[in-house]
Each structure stands twice: as structure tokens, then as C-alpha cells.
Amino acid sequence: MHEVSIADSLLKIAVDECKKNGCRIILNVKVCIGKASGVMPEALLFAFDALKAETIAEGATLTIEEVPVAGHCSACNADFTAPESYVLCCPQCGSSAYTLHEGRELDIKELEVE
Amino acid sequence: MKLKVASKILDANERIARDNRKIFSDAGVYVINLMSSPGAGKTSLLETTITALKNSLKVGVIEGDVAGTDDAIRIDRLGVPVVQINTGGACHLDANMIYEVLGDLPLSGLDILFIENVGNLVCPAEFKVGEDIKVMILSIAEGHDKPLKYPLMFQESAALIINKMDLKPYLEVDVEKIKRDALSLNPSIRIFELSCKSGEGVEQWTAWLQTLTS
Ligand SMILES: Nc1nc2c(ncn2[C@@H]2O[C@H](COP(=O)(O)OP(=O)(O)OP(=O)(O)O)[C@@H](O)[C@H]2O)c(=O)[nH]1
Ligand SMILES: [Mg+2]
Ligand SMILES: [Zn+2]
Ligand SMILES: [Zn+2]
Image (cartoon, rainbow over all chains, first blue to last red; front, side, top):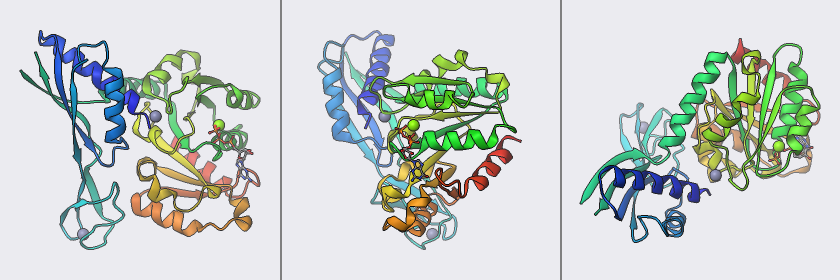
């Protein structure tokens, strides 16, 4: 829904990091986007391409790694990943005594710069 | 050359949210980020709540809307401090928008501050603004499929208000399913069924608010 403001923050961080390291051009930005983060990869790509014009990331590509929802169940002690963007109960035993530890990521991982 | 970065994209927002949080707790004010889709009844709930608590708690309100001052005018009529934020298109409030209006509220004189977010079931849940808790409203006219279609907001909220219960006789809506799915997504969520129009169920909600701020 607000992929434009996400792309904007992402570009700001990338440009700052690039300059801080004495580089001039950003070639690639790599991010991890959780499936439960609410951010749609296609929309983020579109927003990134629209906002990068006339910045040092003008020629940059955006690589998105999607992270599935993953959790742990304390009832049956299973670690699990979910096919959906949410979990209603432990997929192994049906308990609601689960905690989620992955799937909400909105992280910038790596830059390729010159 | 490759640079490892490892930072959160929303890091700037989270830093400002932490600053806001500190300002709120130093002032001794409990802050609730109120979220729902457009028209579910956020401003109505605030009107009902302020009227019910007027003699026991000092309430303040920040109104977030894409445009207009209608909601702030409704709150102002009740004689409580209110500030309107217009996001100018953005579909959610962020921490910096809140930070910029903090000087316009008598924070240390308040017991509780409600932040009415922009009407949207999706992204307000992703942006911390410095609140103690998030509370969401779902009106039964929106249908019982909403928890599974918009899971994030249900997962992030400490309480769910199921509003417009007065309309139940006219709607084919399975309120039990809403509650069941919300609890599956978030086993610790508190659920209040009420009607801002008839007033039924409001007392349980305001009693809970009193326990939070005491
Ligand atoms: N029947 C009925 N109508 C209600 C109830 N609560 C609110 N409404 C009506 O629903 C409409 C929207 O209410 P608001 O309180 O303005 O909703 P909101 O969530 O603040 O809307 P936005 O700020 O525009 O997102 C108004 O016409 C209210 O009168 C209720 O419990 N029952
Ligand atoms: Mg409103
Ligand atoms: Zn299990
Ligand atoms: Zn948004």
C-alpha cells in the first residue's frame, strides 16, 4: 500500500551508505522482504524504479529476496514455515502456543557500488 | 564493490518512534494508536469514550486524515485538546508526523492520548508512532472475512473492537467467526463487542481503559 514510502526510505539508506564509503554509483540493492510484511514485491520494484531517477542509484537494480513466515510451536516443539502470509495455529499439531520469528522482515542487506 | 548493510528499511521511523515513546512516558501519558478501515467508527468511538470518561480521565486526541479537519472539529466540540494532522496523501501516520505536533498538546496534563490513524486496514499496522498499544476497530458491516484478509493488523493489536453491533439484525455476518479468527491470529487479543450508536458494550471498553491508565 505504501511501497512508495518504503522505496523512498530504502533509497535514502542506500545513498547514505554509498557516500559514507566514498563511492559514487549504486549498481544493485539487495533487500529481504517478509511475506507477512505487507509489502508487495512488484509494487516495491515499481516504486524503486520510479524514485531512483536523478539519484546516484539511477542505474541500480533491486533484488528482492522473499522470506516466508516461520515459527516455533511450544506444544509439539516443531519448527515450521507457512505457505501463507499468516498462521492460525501450529501446522503440525494445531496448537495456538506458537511464536513467529520470521516473515516480517523489511531489511536492506547489501549494496553493490562503485 | 559489495557493501554489507544489514539495517531495517524502517529504521529511521523506529528511531523516532522510540523518541516519541520516551517523551510520552516522561509526561506520564498512556498512548493508544487507533486503527481501522475508513468509516468503521474511530471518531465515533472517541466521541463515545471521551463522553464516558470525561469526569475520570484527561483525554487528548491526535487526528490523522489524508485531508480535512472534520474529525478534529468533532473532537474539539467535546472540549478536549485535539490536533489534526493531514498526511497529504500518505495512507498511514508515521513517527515523524507525530513528533512534529507534540508541542501542540499539553502532554503532561493528559492521562491518555488517542492517535486516530488514517482509515486503512493495511499499513498503519506497520508503522510504530511511539504508542503503548495499538487498538483496532472492525465494524460488522465490513464482513467476517476480514481477519484472514488483513492478518497483520489483527496480530499487532492489543484489542479488537467489533463495532456497529446494533446493525447485527440487518446483516448476514458471523461475529463468532470474526472472534475465532482474530484469536487464532493473536491469542492474547482483547475483544469488545459494542455499538457507538446504542452505547451497548461501551462500559466494558471504558472499564478496561481505566485499568490501563491506573
Ligand atoms: N449504526 C451504527 N453506525 C455507526 C456506529 N459507529 C459509527 N457509525 C457511523 O459510521 C459512520 C463512520 O463513523 P466515523 O466514526 O466517522 O468513522 P471513522 O472510522 O472515524 O472514519 P474515517 O476517519 O473517515 O476513517 C458515521 O456515519 C457514524 O455515524 C455504530 O455503532 N452503529
Ligand atoms: Mg475518523
Ligand atoms: Zn505444534
Ligand atoms: Zn501506508
